[in-house]
Image 1: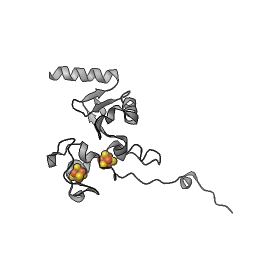
Image 2: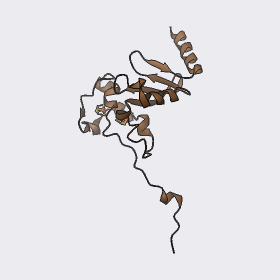
Image 3: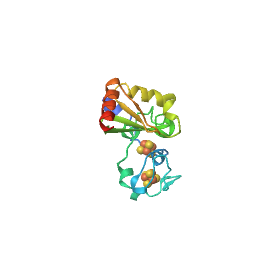
Length: 155
Ligand code: SF4
Ligand code: SF4
């Protein structure tokens, strides 16, 4: 007799996402413990990833970009990986509520292609900070208004 297979056993299990070969945030983000400014490549970065992985600072231990936080889906695993997409997206709670901070892996990457499509889609419902110099803020009208109010209060 043929055994019945339920939906769970039929579904192919995909592995959890892991960073390598992406090392984008090791350049994009600032790491206070290392006195490393955003955009500066980390001195501990090697061809094989972090050279001090077991002893990496707290900032690096706690850092998880949006892509890494999401489950593997077998479709966007490579395409959306920050080194391919050109941006690192970091979800964060801010004065404007839940927001996405976007770091460019390559200059101008947040302004083009698939990366821009994602940014514009996020910005329809939440604040998106593009962490360039100067920073850019996108978001729905109510979020931008709140940002103006906060700025007015502090100036
Ligand atoms: S940007 Fe994301 S996927 Fe790339 S190394 Fe950093 S945490 Fe990992
Ligand atoms: S210490 Fe390691 S994980 Fe942290 S930024 Fe440098 S290379 Fe990346």
